Length: 312
Image 1 (cartoon, rainbow, N blue to C red):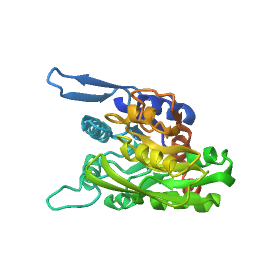
Image 2: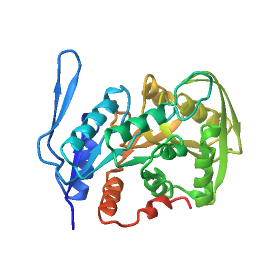
Image 3: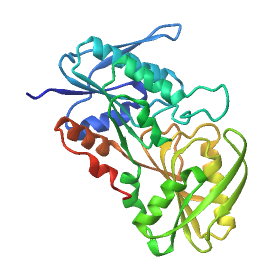
Image 4: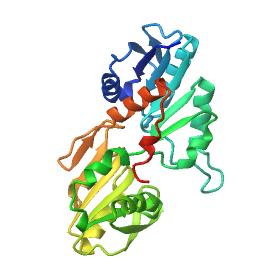
């Protein structure tokens, strides 16, 4: 017995969801959002979802309204008798809060997982979680896709004989090392010291970058402080150029200004988060085809492991 599929979007990810639906070969489902004068909002499906596999696309960037909007959509689908509810979260918000790094703090990522499970989600599809262990916060399957599927082909266009892969901080060392091993190139690291969140006080460069084209890879670019500081330090240490690949273009606060003033030649990002402001230094590579292909494979009960082998 075959079941129908419907793809819907919350308000924060309409552009990406439209591309995903188009790549899949269906139209984006009809949903309305009612906004009350006090800021409260209500979601409503304007077509039946009974017995359907419902995919709801929403990147849960701040404010938290985006997360709550997704939860309301999930609850509405459950109460409308959807067969399965799959949350497609290209960017998983609160993922940086994956552990207690000091006393008396919340583990935000686990709380989000609990809320999604309580709302009625049966599966999550996401990309480049800030911490892999977040998959273990759920009691159902999590399909964790990787930005390397999008970026590897772009990096292979460079002259690999002169490339050095780099991470802007030690936390990204594993990711950068995986690229370096796959491409057979060198590795460099930026070691940062913070005085407070979102502010880099000092950075040390580890590795030889003299005369090299440095490619920085990271899961996200938030205020761009770490990224631009690393890029400027790589150039000061003799690097020929610096290009950056970051999956999630959070780009908050002074990020765009910092990027435009930095030594970065180009920042390549995916469209998991829609750009609020354009820059001549920022180029977007769409992840819509990747997500639509994964949806097709799930519906047809086919393996999606090929999407996890880019750096193996």
